[in-house]
Image (tube, rainbow, N blue to C red; front, side, top):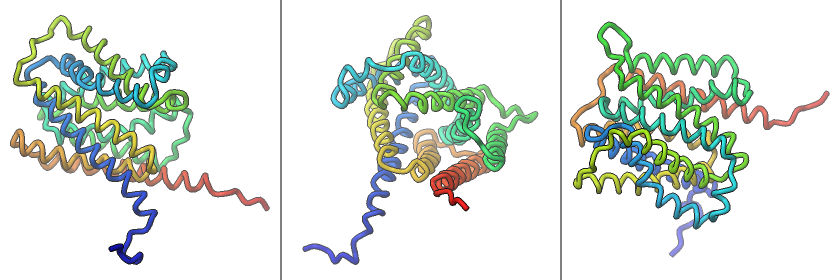
Length: 307
């Protein structure tokens, strides 16, 4: 028996709920993948873990790419930008895994939340985008939030792990700029595939001198990283393809909830008060930035009235 139409959700809300759900699930799966990387990080060099992350996902990404766009779509790409993005990806993963070894997952997420602010800042000199004083103020406040999390005081709270995560966030932001350029000519599948392949080849070459034998009890973790990481990437792509970026992007901050829960469940740790304060500052800055971007897009979309 069908429900009365008055009890059904509006069609627009249903269309918005789909991409939002994709994004929420993608963030949760990425958190699980990061937890797997953290489980591996004490046992293997950071570059080796980065290589294993790419190798575990590469067969699945290749199958997805061939099924959706075919081999020709993977080969006809802009090679210089893909190589640059691959180098940034290797550095990003190495710094990220190194930081995971010493920091709680929730603290890692609090620092990486500054990446969208860095993307906006980098877009000015590289993409020639215009950023107004309000958004520059949001970037400045977000960086203050990072300093609160790192606490560069005489207590020595600015650890190498924290700096490695900050470096990973910078590399992520620079990689996002290359994605904006590549998206004008190459497919999402090609961008994901070549990033994974370069991560495997580059990370494998750099870690070959210190490669540690993989313990049998870790194979299921490596396999899980590949499966959930690939599925998360597909869902993330669908979320941004179907929904508005200004509505979808803020949901990435739910990663902090997953980070806290995984920290508590697997490592019995919780972020301290200063980490919560810094994370709140960074998230507030990011949300304000997204709101200003949305207002700016609306203003530019309005027709100009002539006298």
